[in-house]
Length: 509
Image (cartoon, rainbow, N blue to C red):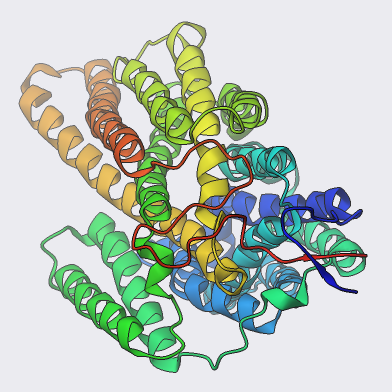
């Protein structure tokens, strides 16, 4: 075995099979972010979880996942991506079995935290494996198109699957369903995934960086989660935000001084990658808020069942798949990424803008369906080059941690989106109720007012989501300045590490 030049790579003959197993694992992780939401009311009743603690079923997962992603990315660089990926899958399956078999609150919360921990190991390893296995521009575009479609549309698939399992089987199956996914992906990856050994980062682990980044991200995610339930002026909420700023600032200072940083600042300060992390995080804020509001609107206002609600999200999934695999993949090697990301986020903003017109009696086919198609097409088109750019041109030793930053921006964006937009919606709902309470004198009028005030809250928050997507589009246009993906790496803006070819070693067979 010898290392061939990057300009004439010998592609791994098993790479497409490997991608299939990586895609299964990614789908499982994305599904898990939404599938449990639909099952939560039934699980809460069965296990006797208090109203005050029910949010911890979601929060325990988000804190462990979001807080440990950078650590997981660094472990995959150090320990090997394949080994980290398979270990993460086996651990995730075991944690899912524990959650499905939970007999009480403590067991459920522990299982969710373990799912988050193992998810933080396998998610960055999955993305960086694609980065090191696909080096030819067109193939790379296709591979990231598939990955981007799953990353974007998997959450909506989770709503459908969660609805089916909860309605026709039992909430426990929303956990057990992960086990076959994980086993198939782990066994498949073990036999078909190959990664170049030269891409390892064998420098010692940056323990201060691990501690500061984990605590800083956990404080940030918990701060936003707490704000949603206890308000922005709550003492604990404010303490968490202050702590996260201090810890993450200390982390940045530490990373600039230590010899082997957990997150080399070169990964963040490169203009294109920085633009991707920022615009992607903002887009996810808007998307997560929308999933939440549309789910509530369809179930509470329109009276849809969980299964019907899940199917109502199908146009968004179809739009994402078409945007990712047809538009993004076909154009990525011909046009600059910003000309896909910027217009993609803008198209999604137009779809979101349509949803600001929601009323209690809005037609699904007349407004919600076309809005979802636009959202899906826009997001799918933008996600594809974003996923590719996030790891494109990085040194092999940084591939895991660069991948982890994509997942971190998504997780933190999701936590912020849910809390921020939910709080805005709740305030608008309360204000509308207060202003119109006097006019609702009969039970029927009061019921209608309750629905109208909910819709008022959703549309107010959706206006904010439109603005956030416009900002994401502007960031993509301004910061992402690389050309079409012709297989060449992005030159660092600080002049360091400029290469003529993708800095991914390829092993000849």
